[in-house]
Image (cartoon, rainbow, N blue to C red):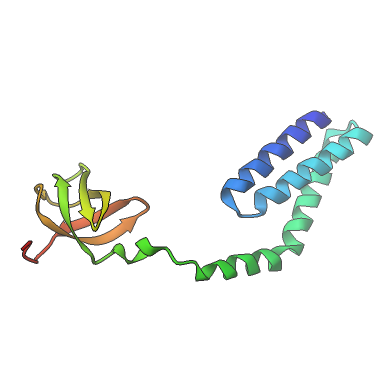
Length: 143
């Protein structure tokens, strides 16, 4: 049974590397604690309780540390945060419920709109959701 706990711990630690939340890390450490417990006891309930206790204790006592790490990252600046309000040009026609493409500066973005916007039209970005922009036809003259 200890091997299963080790594998679970490794999977949780690897998953933590993609999320940076620290919660999966503590669950992974709890799984490793369960593996150690499995070496001494075959009782699965004791193994689960030890793993849960270790994960809970680590979560509670390291909360100030994780909050400090998260708050220090607030200074991070994503240059694409300022894309809302910028103008661009439609490179692939956008239709309602169908994505098109727009060029904003030197970047090409996938975009949606509530109205059909033909290729070559000038648009304004009204919202950014990850890599998809919500746009509308611009009132500005493309000249």
